[in-house]
Amino acid sequence: MKLRFSVGLILVACLLAAGLLAGCGGGENVLVVGTNADFLPFEFYDDEGNIVGFDIDLAQAIAEILGMELRVEHMDFKGLVAAVQSGRVDVAIAAMTIDEERLEKVNFSDPYYNARQAIVVREDNDDIHDKEDLLDKKVAVQIGTTGDLTVTDMGLPEEQIVRLEKVTHVFLELENGQVDAVVIDLPVAQRYINIKEGLKLISGDFEDEMYGIAVAKENEELLEKINNALEQIKADGTLDKLMEKWID
Ligand code: GLN
Image (cartoon, rainbow, N blue to C red; front, side, top):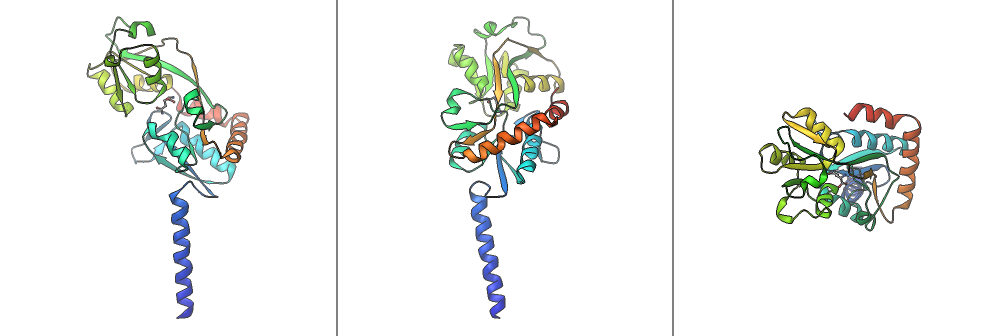
């Protein structure tokens, strides 16, 4: 009787501890990664409902080097930086561009991918050849992303910008003729053009953008571990393999 009672107690204590660990970051041995699984080919849901993609393989490789288990959590892109700040997730790996505004709130790892913005239009569109041609057009972007920032900074009037949460919806606007163009990260633009009929890519000559892994300011130890892991991943050819596997 007494033995049973203490076994029960230990069990309850363990469950409580596990619950606490699950509630905030990952604790010692779980790396909790926040992402927005709507960004082909970096993170997206496969047919079985698993989150897969370039960033997920990268996260897995990092977790393995750190000897940690990986847990991936999907959330809105615009909530990711706050989730890192509050410790709800340990890091964000979400094709996230290292930029000034985000750097005020979180730290970033060394860059792991060099992207840039690109323009997507319908195949029959004949009057958009460069970014300047967007100035009098309607453009759809994913809200809170560097695509959003780019068209806003270019001076497009507010009423010409359609900001949406989901990339899927951003492209639907274009396909349905609600907007003239989409501005989005180049690898994503390339993937959509390959899987959808009737769209074409315009380079637009935008600036380079570096993707990095966002880590809370106070979590310097984890940042260093991640940078060391990234160095290894770059040196041993893992990163090249991920490019080959996922990028069109
Ligand atoms: N690279 C872009 C950014 O950081 C888009 C990222 C995303 O939508 N997942 O804003």
